[in-house]
Image 1 (cartoon, helix red, strand yellow):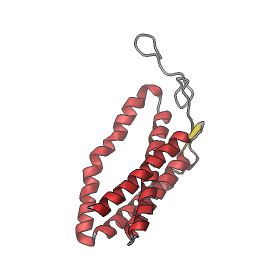
Image 2 (cartoon, rainbow, N blue to C red; image 1 turned 90 degrees about the horizontal axis):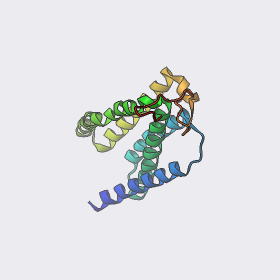
Image 3 (cartoon, rainbow, N blue to C red; image 1 turned 90 degrees about the vertical axis):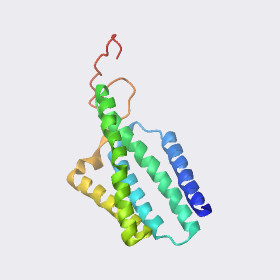
Length: 171
């Protein structure tokens, strides 16, 4: 239990550092390339973490995992929100958050793989599947690498169109 607590603490420290990194970034645009790099780095980190046989090295990989998990997720959600028209952002994010409902499916796959091949190989397989999915998405939608969306607070949507007025006359 002590080792698990240590590893989870390292992942948490990485997540905190990732949140601070994203919070201190001064950017005018959200980029698709940084989302792709973050997703690949996270999946690679899972594979490295699964391949480590030393606690100290696992702690380092845990920090990396936590960092890229938060930076990827934050940038992904930001890109999605600023790309959607203002009046649809709530609906877009509600669809995006449906991914929380797929966690049990992933857990079932991870558990099945762990029972059949062991925990380390299950993590390696899941990390590799993540990389394959990212590569597939980029191969079928290469424009994501060039995606550059302005981060603005002026009430305009991603296309620069003014957001429609809400009830009561407020934008």
